[in-house]
Length: 446
Picture 1 (tube, rainbow, N blue to C red):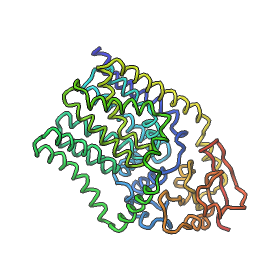
Picture 2: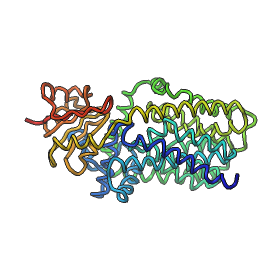
Picture 3: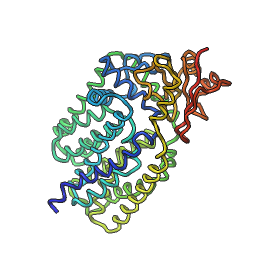
Picture 4: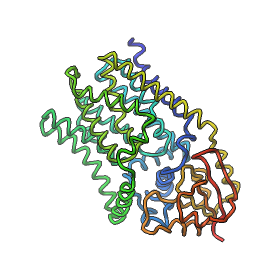
């Protein structure tokens, strides 16, 4: 067994690689938030400051400062681009690398309280879960933030409180939901009535991270307030809390199993010493993810629930059946997605767009499921519709009308003012690879 054990976390990581690579440029479709997250990193790499011109004419100040998300992801991604170059695959592979870290950290955390096989089983569940696979092949900061959060909790249980606080501070510098690890650590220490110096040590490291964000925000406080206000306005327009659970209904088995394991751990008397921390972490992360309104944020609590499930599997046979059901459910849905989206070809989409848009021509890209942004990086000046609400509801339409070319999703362009601009025009090209992967290119200004 001792010879096999070091191979188990590597096997779980390999499962995650095999699960994610077939979906790398296919599902989720390249688009949505990705241009707004990738372009600032490219600007930082090339020009030395954190900004983007994608929203010029829509959101003032973003050409010089990005504030609607904390800065650490952009800095880390710029470093990744410095090594591997910018692009769709490179950006998504960074998320995948962080996702692989999540799988390994789930194993290491579970191994703290259980044997190697339960730890391997739950890390494999995490590796094939919808929550990880969809975020690990998408250029967002979630997998980096969750990896830092898990690392903070792991070093905390190993009594490196100061280091845990620093990692928690980096998690918060990556995404606002990075508040989860420091909240977990402080709550755990308070419940266990730890001495005040321990709490102070954890908080000191976290405050250092918060101070970095504050110093950066003070460079242009008015821009910070504006961009944060736009983000809050977008959140207020989100569906109610219960809607994200409805959207996650296909994955109800996995959610129920890990949540049930955390609930069992909270009330059982057979709980291993120190494992109360997992209950606190799961509750804090679940509350934060729910409050954030978006289904994808379930990734923030799912790994902690997987670790709680490992403890249940280690002690109860019925938990084996629950784990098997969750693995079968997530594995089947993953396989279905790999098969369903196998026909998608982003390289062909890019070739078709470049064939009708000459180098140097200005392009307006509607906020869409799939985007040609990655096919035009460094070739064309681009503007992209913003996901946040604007004071002027006609701003997107005016910007589109001023561009040489307009690219929008079909059959629904999403933006009524852009629809007005292209109404009656014949598209120069239509790329149709099925629902969620359809765009049309129109001539812009006349």
